[in-house]
Length: 146
Image (cartoon, rainbow, N blue to C red; front, top):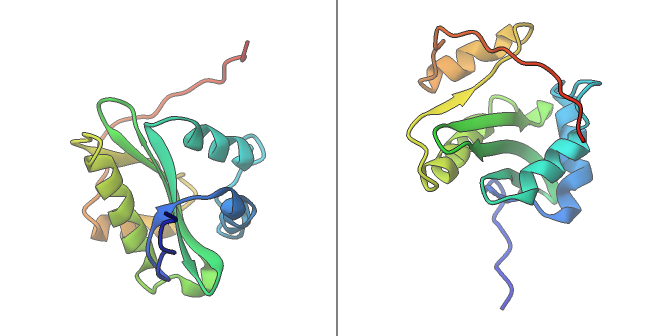
């Protein structure tokens, strides 16, 4: 039996048919960077049981996303995006709530996200959702894949 189609604005797991629209949305929202291939990020998130990409559609198009991952200790949010023409409509809050629910269902007790220092406009949005600076520095380095 096939699953019923999701209602407009309902967050569901991404399908193969959504991939190009999702990448386009991320680009429209300024979330992609030349050093991160969004197609690879999507494929990696969909490859295992500890991460997913949730999408909401309206009128047949993907209008919002949230990538969620559970590292065994914390939940993480990435690529929270809302179509520019729908920002301020509540879809961003709904994306975060849906991703949080997905993570909590998998055992996350704390949920974190990273905001690029150049993306100051979004800090107020996350503050209104209860997120705050965690007084830590994120460090990283690129490694060669084998």
